[in-house]
Amino acid sequence: MKKKHWKQHVTTVILSAILFLVLIFMSGKLGMVAYASDKISGEVGTLKWYLEEQKDVVDEKEQVETALVISGKGEIPDYKNPEDRPWNGIADQIEKVEIKSVKGKDNITKIGARAFENLPNLSRVWIPSSVRIIEKYAFKNCPKLDFVTIMSSTGVDEEAFDPDVIQDVICDHMYMGRVYVADDIVMATLKKDGKCSYEIYCSGCGDYVDSVGDQKIPFIKSIYLQKKNYVYTGKKITPEVIVKDRKRKVLEKDSDYKLKYSAGRQYVGTYTVKVNGYNKYRFTKKLSFIIKPQGTKIVKISAGKKAFTVKVQKQSIQTTGYEIAYSTNKNFAKGTEKKLVIPSNKTTKKKITGLKKGRKYYVKACTYKTVKGKKYHSRWSEVKTVRVK
Image (tube, rainbow, N blue to C red; front, side, top):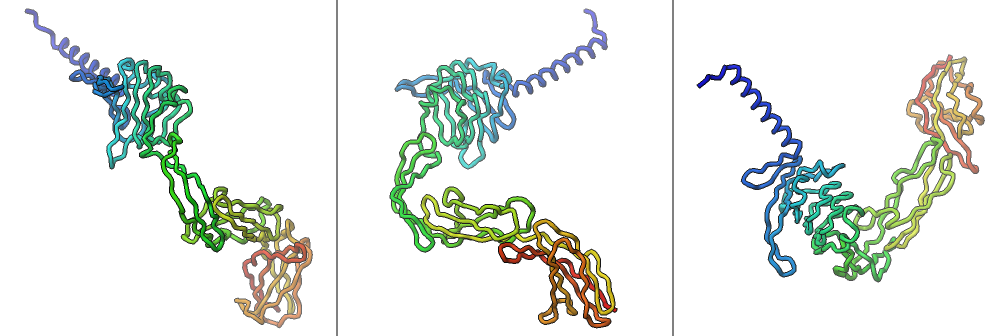
């Protein structure tokens, strides 16, 4: 017998290792498909899947079905091409799809696009309450599919199933969301509770489920604006309205009340919001808010003989003029403050005379705008100091 050269041994080992790595790589590409002990199984992301024979009673007859069972936490991914699915190689064998759900644990929440498209022998599907979304084409082109149980899918794409299949979906009403249709309403007001009875329908299939009578509707306790004072920006201002009932529940705009804002609310002035009750509520409330002019600042202040001259930054948009306030008290205490008006927003300099020699004065400025005879002032500027000669 010829002895193999050591180099031949090394070559054999290397080729075996390469073949092993290729197989591992391919198993990853195929979603970790395994065929050990005649059981086809694999993984896709955080989910596990396997093929098993299940006994079930269909049309009063016991039969064996080949089921694709998927379990775990997360989402069954979207597929652009059905051939990318790890179970695509056994598509012809799949007669039933079962999404496993374990009580008290996180489960599968989404069935992705084309996950089970083009399964020629699929006839039964069971989807648990954990699944919230069924994406486009998820069960498209499954000609034998005629038995689907959906427990609590809140979003089913209109093209997830073939049109004739979705009409035969079975819903047990146990886990579905509920749609409450009001009947016999006595509307709640700003002072009195209302009451209402409801008919309850399943949000999954639309069937009538139950009814509830004489439920109290708490009266409205408070209606207010999130913010009442604004500064001119040139943009339309729409304050947020908060409406609460006596139980401090925040009501929903357009569902419980409607809003109407006054026009022109991008300029300096006073504006209103009219709040009208809607559906279960009957009330009207007017709220006001103010848009003030933008402020100014003192850019220069110089001392003179028993006088000082102050110059403010020009603010010509949505203003009428300026006001100057000065005092010998840094807090502008009552009785110490004096004010004077610069009636034109084009004039930015003003000399104040008749002051006490050697005294220190505190000075601040603001803008104002007159609208329909009413003055709207900006916030005061930062205080400057000057000591007169």
